[in-house]
Structure formats: C-alpha cells, structure tokens
Length: 157
Image 1 (tube, rainbow, N blue to C red):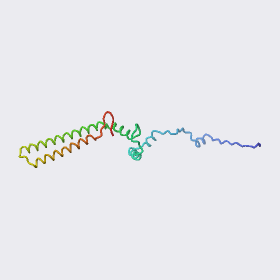
Image 2 (tube, rainbow, N blue to C red):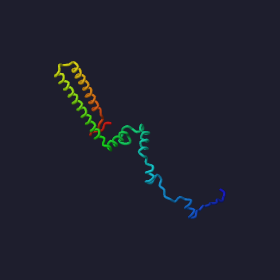
Image 3 (tube, rainbow, N blue to C red):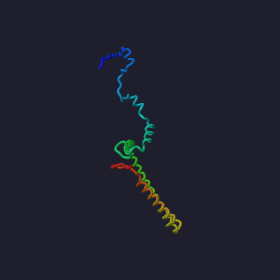
Image 4 (cartoon, rainbow, N blue to C red):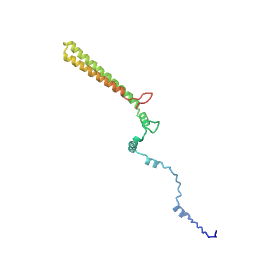
C-alpha cells in the first residue's frame, strides 16, 4: 500500500448560520396537535359517504366493526327496543279494534236481518263482511307476527 495523502475537511457553522441552516425544533413522528386532529376528523356527511362506499366491505355479523355492531350500538343510543315494543303494542291494539268493529257491523246486520224478513241481499252482505273481516284479521295477525322487534333475550334484525 502506498502512502497517499488524504485531506480531511470539516465544515463548521457559526451560531447564526447553524440556526438558519439546521432545524432545531423538536418534532415527533406520528403525533398531531389537537387542532390538526379536529381538522382531519371527518364530518357527518363525509362519514356517511365513507360508509356508503365501504358498505359491502363491512362484515354483516361480528362483535365490532360490523353491521350488527352498528345496529346494536345505534339502537341502544336511540332506545330502539322500547320503540319497537310500543309499535307492536299499537299494532295489536289496531287488530283488536278492527275485530271489535267487524263484530259490531255483523251484529247490526243480524239485527236488520232479524227485524225484516230475511232478505237475501242482507244475508249476502253479512257473509261478504265476515269474509272480508277475516281476511283483515288474518292480515293484521300476520303483520304483527312478522314485525321484527327486540326482546330482552336478544335482538332480531
């Protein structure tokens, strides 16, 4: 190996140059200020835009990050279980009132038929009302039975 000369040069800054050239502020990677966090937080409109975009990517069932989780937490927030119970009770009351009204109409026709000589027209009207009333009652019962409501044991969605 030959003896070669190697010149080393060191560049030095004076205090004023150093402050102008080198950033001496402390920065932490990945941390943001509260103001930056608030600015970067999505609005409700942006959230639902993201939700609609990701709708089919979100799993249907799961403890967290699922449609099931969203419906349970939102349902708890708006007290959905009580609302569903109230709707079911009102539907049952409507069914009962319709049944009572039908019975009253049939009684009225019966009294008309009994007071007058049995008119075939009144008999046919009575039969038609009874048939229509049974369809209404059956339909209301089906609607009430198929209405999805929550119960204390678990929620049906």
